[in-house]
Length: 115
Length: 112
Image (cartoon, rainbow over all chains, first blue to last red; front, side, top):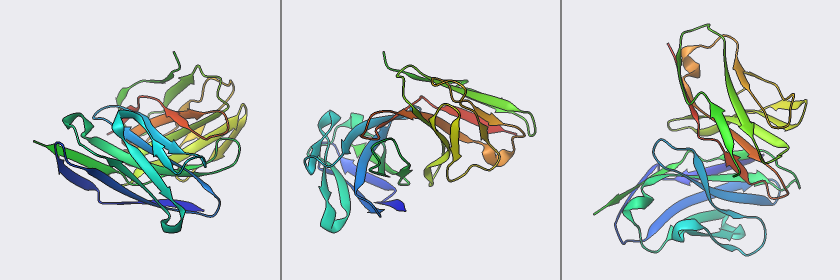
């Protein structure tokens, strides 16, 4: 069984400020973890993924996330927000199966970036 | 170019009128899946397929059917749509060992 909890359905930051989007997971097997971004009226785009290599994962557009097993967390950060970062962000978990397996999503966090 | 395509992108229909949403991928991926996205609920899996002729239920399969006769196609069938199936639908594919799923552009369905 696996689940994802994203704390905060809406997060607002000023342009240039730190972005922190929280994700906690539950998994009965070692997980793969993902962050996806959805821009308005578009599909989901993979930002980054953790698949058991380095615990600090760098993704596209300056985002990164750190896998912390002791805290069962995979929070997404970006040092300096840009207006173009406004979107909805989804954290997801799957179990390691060697082949594609069930992907469970969080309920999403909408990021607003203000001037 | 690696692509997942869905058709139609937008559809308005009436209760009970059978419809099919198509999904096609050119990445030779074995795994394909359908999700629906609803406000406040995130994405929930409807059905998935591990390979040709192999399909299984996800979390919310009621009212939906799928088929996987060819590797590249995975249509979603609503035999008798109802208003509670109004949603944004995504097809996804995955291949290799890291479970990365690639999503189509979405189909916005409204059932009146």
